[in-house]
Image (cartoon, rainbow, N blue to C red):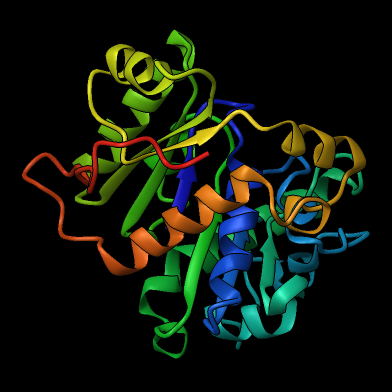
Length: 267
């Protein structure tokens, strides 16, 4: 799966929490971070490499274009360059702005793209859960940065800007045949779900409440699961993980995952 949504909607927190909760169920999990800004590593409890790890996996061809080095495919790249995170999750990053020279960053980003576009053909990773954290907006989904995902969790806040971004993002991935799971985040009040569905124009499958524990964890730069394991957000995300694992069914004709229940998750 991959997480989509407007900037600041909470993708990294939810993606990192989902990845670790999947791993705690005994599953093998690879987290994929294609956002060049910090986020997912903090939510996973992973160290940020000083230099982009995939920089060592690429070289330039005779025309000056980046490519993976000979002998490095998606499986070998994951084995060599994914870094460990809490609960046994492995993290593969495209690299972060600010910590590297531009050429190294460009090489790593190109290498990351070459790896993720070939993940669907990597039979050795067929038993792994892939959880992707995409940058804000629909651009990467439109240009194939998440071909590994058959389900896109689209996060939406109760604002028109967030809803429009979610609708556009969902339209792009539905056109490619993927399943869309609309999830409301930072919901406050009893009418929060109804308001989001009204401005979104469709149903959401679950609601994650506005939670001060999330803001506190982000201020400290630590994972929500470590800072407040009993937080309301953790409980709802755990329910969402279970739903996606046990009750996910093929999408309807429009590529939408329908809600399994019309209730707001318990607070």
